Image 1: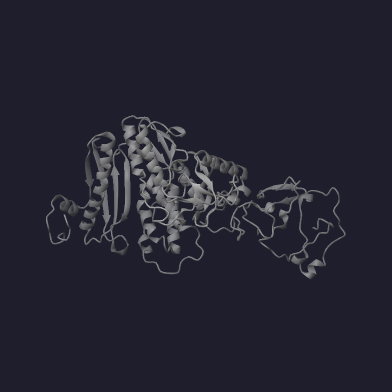
Image 2: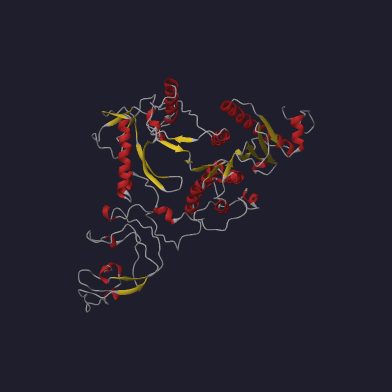
Length: 553
């Protein structure tokens, strides 16, 4: 229908242009302007006057153009038409910025090269709904896309923090100064229930442009381990200590860089002329040395003030949620669970509503070691990201994934089609264990409180490249630590492989023992279990035999 003349053209020969969307040109007074449209799966009464069909001669053939009907102009009060609408579909479409004005673009909702519907989406591809809720990748996407006002408020709050902490000072330009660029990182923060808590904007420096020895030197910064967190929770519960948590606000903005660094004026900061550059007074996020500077500042401050509070840090009360782990405490035990985090991952990879298998890997997983063939031309998802997410879940709450993630990590550089299928298999298994909890201080094994248990095992020749896989579990009033990995040396027998595993995990056991002693001033004994009698004999009686003479005791 031509909105000017009222002529209606009916044709079957229509050229589909996925990058052109003339219906975007809606009057500003229209009350039906949405960023996206979902067509319901039910009969609705639609007013005919709201329907517009563009009559473009370039899209029609000559024969069809001659069929224009000019004898039926629209009346002032046209009748309403009952139509049976198709099932609801989610669409992703972004027009070309060169041909459509910026204010007529439907925000940043997907890949501008594709038009994709749920019905056409391949199985186990990244979920379409996840694309619609992606965080902005750039500053322009944040201020012009969906929820722009919330992102603008987050940007304003971040820039206010910069001024409060005196992060930079404006200086004049100098051609001899090396300038570092900045970028904005946007993230929707969620609470322990998986609900949106706030919009977070973080200004970061592109530290990958720094050169070692010129822009930075020492970068070491100690960090905590998840095993330490579980041990701390266990000791607190055993001694009936209250467990509370706090957050250090703008932690890295307290450290001072040791080198002289300059940055371009950040996007969205308009208090100074665009030609000005900034001298960094504090170690902004993204610098190679930011964690190191923060650690030095925190250490010196705690020593000098004797643990006197010096930050405006929010007190979060009793511990409930940290690092994506929901923590529940009662009189009997402490439970750790990542159900909301796992639910988001399963939705992302479109394996939420499936029948879970009984094991993380199929029985024929060893056939994946020497696969040949070309790489996947169109990967269904990011293989490295999927394995990394599984790895994090394994390290936090699910030790049953330790071998599967270690095995799949061998194929990160060149994954084949079957490797993608095995990752989907592991994700399906995860869908059946998302409600599993890791319970601490709940003695399933009766042992004295003064003992730390560790269980080790080794699969001689089970790994690739003729190497053995080792597995271990440290138990102290609950599972504290676990891992599975390939041994660093080639073992000549199963006894040697088991003995190597005992050696490696005895070191982990000694570290846990020392950590408990530093925390409680109690000396505990360690019990290391193995299922190989030959390895136990070698460890108990270091006698040289023909098969073990090359082992250095």
